[in-house]
Image (cartoon, rainbow, N blue to C red; front, side, top):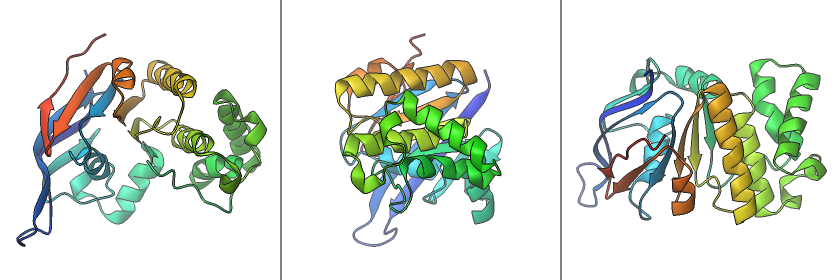
Length: 231
C-alpha cells in the first residue's frame, strides 16, 4: 500500500535545555497508508494536538522526520509548507479559525479562490458542500451569527472543499450533537472511499473511534497503541 504519512523518531521539546523543559512528543514513529481513516486518541495533554501541528508543518519538530507522501515536512521552506497545506492538506482546527468578516460561503470558498477557481465555480462548490452538512439556510451568515456547532460544520466544509489528499482534524465533532456527528462521519467516510482521501482525526469519543479503520492511542507523548485495521 502507498504510504500517505510516515513519522520517524519525531520528538518535540518545549523550552529545551531549561529547567521547565517539556517533552510533548517522545520519539514517535508511525505510518498511515493512503485511504485510511484513523482516530488519534489519548487523555488531555497527551500530545494529540501537537502531533497534528507538526504533521501539518504548523509547529517545527525538535528532531526526526515527517513525510507527507514524498515530501519531508521537516525540510520544507515556509513557502513550500504553505503550498503543501494549500494543495495537499486539509486542516480542521479545534477553535474553527473562521474569518469573522466573511460569510459561511465565503469562508468555504476561500481555499478554492486561492487555488485559482472562478468565483462562480467556487460559490457553487461551497454552497453544495454546506447544504450537505445541513447549512443551506446559513450560507450567507457570518460566524457571529452561527452556533458553535454550525461554525464547526463550516470549518469542516472549508477543510474538504479542495479535496485534499490528507485531512487532519482536531476534535472535528467536538461541538456537535450525536446526530450531527454521525452526519459528519458519514461525509468523512464518503470522501475517504470515493476520493481515497486519508483522514487522521483527534477525538476523545470512543464512538467516533469505532467508526474509523483503526485507533492510534497516545499518552505522555508516546504511542501506546498503534491499532489494527478493522476493515
